[in-house]
Length: 119
Image 1 (tube, rainbow, N blue to C red):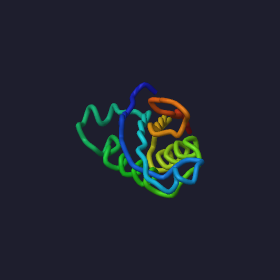
Image 2 (cartoon, rainbow, N blue to C red):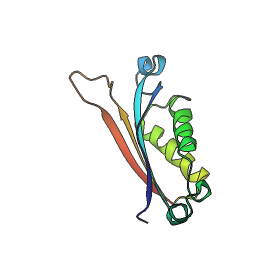
Image 3 (spheres, rainbow, N blue to C red):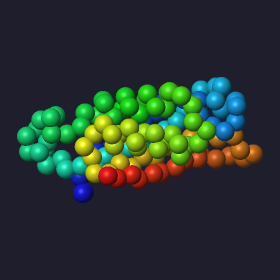
């Protein structure tokens, strides 16, 4: 499948991390998702019925990131991927999660994970 819906650089605030302070204080998390599905019908009909509403995807990601804490970015990404696969008729989903405020003894742009899940 080569068709994709992409939501890039969504930004939410959550309480995820191994350290207690990371779960006590909100911090920013960046999320990208790619949904692989056949978009031909939507393209030919110009009808939302043939695709996935971006608002629904955005709200799912927001609810998970702003919801209960996870220790690992891997678990956060897995929760997003699982929910997207269960809610939408997609062949594959790619989820990227970035954490720009990682507690390390030096400078870092962000730490992140990317997972790919399919049916």
